Image 1 (spheres, rainbow, N blue to C red):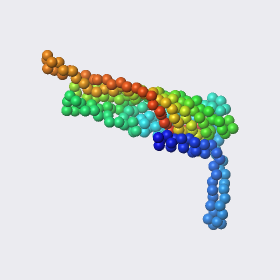
Image 2 (cartoon, rainbow, N blue to C red):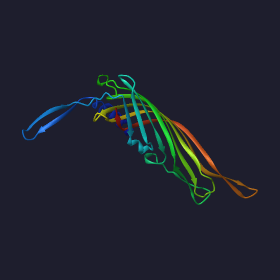
Image 3 (cartoon, helix red, strand yellow):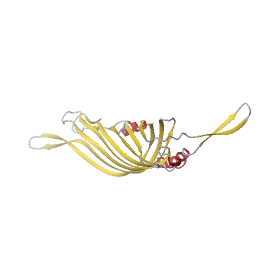
Image 4 (spheres, rainbow, N blue to C red):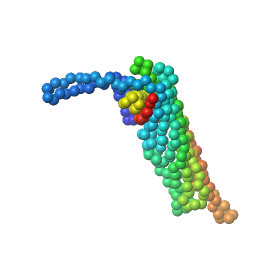
Length: 238
């Protein structure tokens, strides 16, 4: 609940402020006077921006993006890149006790991938798209793969996975700090469908031979949940 309230505050009060002129209060200590100056924002009429989102590494994504102007008020943005499981905020307890031996089962990181597409609408800044406040519906697919290793060496290694499909409605602001350098700040909320495939060790006992037969017991589960998203993108435009 605290995260949701913080996101609502961010979207309602902080993001819109970036779409306005900045007012700077100057205090002249020598004269004792206080006065205000206006600082105009930089408006760049770019056609495309290549982006990188460094904060997404905390959820196991190496996130690259490309935004392209399609008319005077809107653009389309693609994001793509590799994923890594069991790092950053995605780390869980990836060690499982082996009930049939003295060792354990461990999940190890492997490469996956993600991709997303979003439509952006820029309602402000006199039709100069890629500038200022925007709204954006986004569809995203992500798969995370991981290896599963039995340290008792009774079973060969296998592979599990997590599949995610998200739909979010994002709000953000893209500001230009120079002619070719942009800073894109965003947040959003939506729904996500997730499916997981994991493995535990299991065994069957043959009463005739007195021998245990070991095997991987696959556990699959899925479900829908609310999704909060947010971050910062660094861009190079032209």
